[in-house]
Image 1 (cartoon, rainbow, N blue to C red):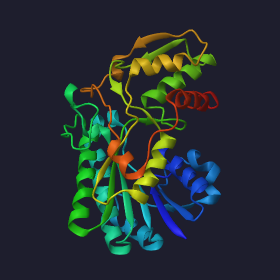
Image 2 (cartoon, one colour; image 1 turned 45 degrees about the vertical axis):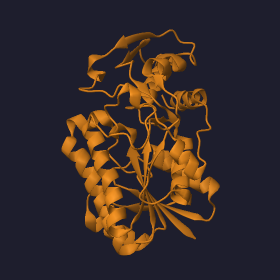
Image 3 (cartoon, rainbow, N blue to C red; image 1 turned 60 degrees about the vertical axis):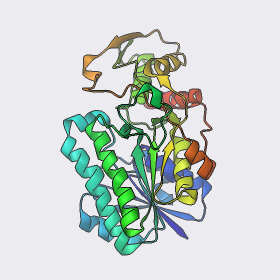
Length: 319
């Protein structure tokens, strides 16, 4: 049996990837890392079908022990401090978790499974300050990160390149643009709006929806399309290369909000909340995924309206 290890399996993308592997790759055994404080609700329904290993990625001993035990064929490195606003409050912790955690993983891989293929989840936030003549963004666009989170991801990205060049480690870097869908953390904008709508519908909160910057333009892909891309990256991607995973379509946050509001019959007032504004925000993220499509055949399949509908239903069943 082939072994696939997912760091951050209890998270948003990690749980969807585990589910996708169980449904589509019957010859793959799914392993995942968790910490004692990890919330398990995203993987509750598949606990009997996966192998969980307690591991603190910031601790090299913990990572070595895990790698020595599993010796995976594929590693999907999704564990991260992944929320941009948190990185403003905790820049050092964000860089420690995202960069040192990955170094520990790479070092352990070199010792115990040097032939494994590793996909690392990089981010479109790395592009940061993008100029109008640079969209849709290609992989060779300059990186001008605008948050501590984005800087931490640039570090992960280049460490992946460096370990491939220096040691031949089979690292494939994917720069994923905004992705959403059921189980998205409520701190993230699509999920936050969907949860507020669900709470208003049930009378839990007054009919006022609080928003931040509505003019930012984002490229949204369904998480279920994204995790299929992660598998194709390790199956068909070229080690050392970097690939954008995106929809190639952009919406303002306001457009997205209006689509969500259109799925509800509640009468809702919109109000801006100054605390939701960032010190600096990326104006536009629109990705070109041609390189990834040509290498693997991947393209997004789930319509955005379906993604938002499923996200809203997810919150309606939970609030």
